[in-house]
Image 1 (cartoon, helix red, strand yellow):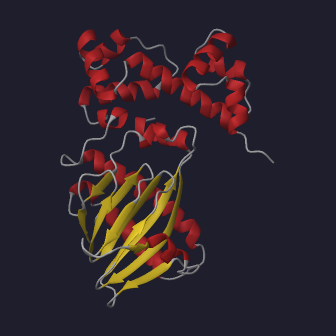
Image 2 (cartoon, rainbow, N blue to C red; image 1 turned 30 degrees about the vertical axis):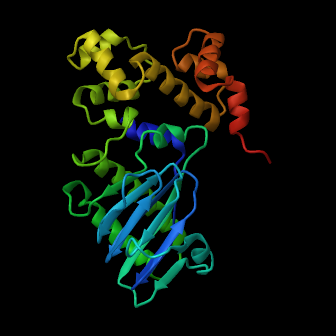
Image 3 (cartoon, one colour; image 1 turned 180 degrees about the horizontal axis):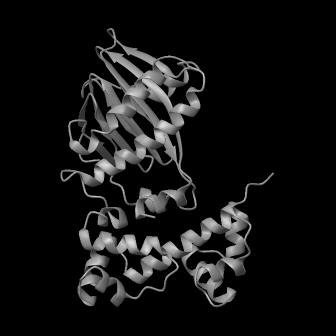
Length: 308
């Protein structure tokens, strides 16, 4: 499994396309902090988006998409001078169809938006690697495949339809993953940090792929360096500079995170999981798991199990 798919599988990604904004004339709204990640796309017209913690407001045009990471408050508007209304309150009053028509004139801008939430136990894996605001320009080659998804979203959100919640939820996940792909492929995009940013490096990205394909394997730094045709010291230094941790520490973290998913989602015993993840004893596995995850395998399983 490639690194991005592997990490997303750990997050139990849940997508929900929740709103459609049709705005015209003078308009602006501000949204409060939220859980995890917001995404959106401009279906027609143009607007500005400004995110707390980002460098500057960004002008978005038809076909552009955006991701807002880490639950940061943000503003979306037709200009930069209008005092914003409370966007949360406006959409709360919009009714069950979640379509808001707003502004001083007939709508010229249509924006769809939604949220992506993750399993709290692993959410930081992705959120810490993303800049506050990711924008994907619709005019770029990596974003060209988004056009079909945006056409479907435009249709599904234009009016209430049977099965719309299911359809838009799936489309939200597709839009999210493709926006991440386009962001990683764009040479002009702001840098992502950690493992996500390192995927763009040919040699370190290849090493990450090897690690994620066989996370239980007892890789050594020398083996990984040889596999990507680097010296041992050069590989170790570059890996830590890009990813933020040493190769073996990264591998241990991912090994324990995937073991945590097995504990959370299945009924295999700790002993069986320890063996499958390459440990000769349950106690050795439990010690490593607690060191990385902050709690024993049994405590982790109980914390991840819904009550009732």
